[in-house]
Image 1 (tube, one colour):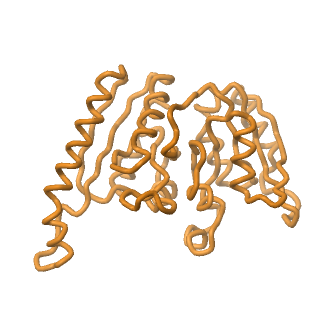
Image 2 (cartoon, rainbow, N blue to C red):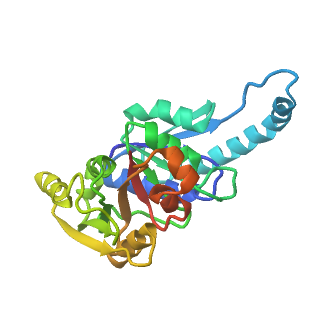
Length: 271
């Protein structure tokens, strides 16, 4: 993955995803494009909310410039090629505009400016619409070992197949790939795409994998997946995102929403 699109913002996971982007770039001789978006440059005259934003814009710009200077100083010493795009507009839209010539988009899991509470609507928007996979990096990630074991969450859906295919460049670097299915007692028998088909697909690309079925028991699906990944010392979980309608997941919950609410390691998502 040589073309890496990195979202720049003041959220708590900024430094973590910068380090992960650097590790991926080094392993692939890749290039990092840092995209920093500031919203609400234009506002309607007489609009009280717009006027408030206008009053705040000098401080917003100053903070953005300080963050850029800080990150650029770090990048100058890392030996990785990079460029910087400073744009006005809503971050999801600007990231989507830049994504067609990226190989991967790297984001944080929480909504910027929300104090880390709840899963990010930015992640949901980009995952659903970007033509490339999205790597979500939690704030406590310190590095990313591309040679470490990796786990693919497999439920037989088209989304999980898309994620598997999108993750091939990273899975090819892993020392061990596990294709894991969480088995629920009341689940219907069989999958649309059996895990054996996922394993055959990987083998055609020279990647051998272990297929495992994880009994869910009393745990949630996210807990079962994170535990299985931790037990195998994985650096990454690969999974399909929003198998149900996103609105349904937002209203009633879903595995994607639950995984993003409390991520415990980097996750590669594709829809």
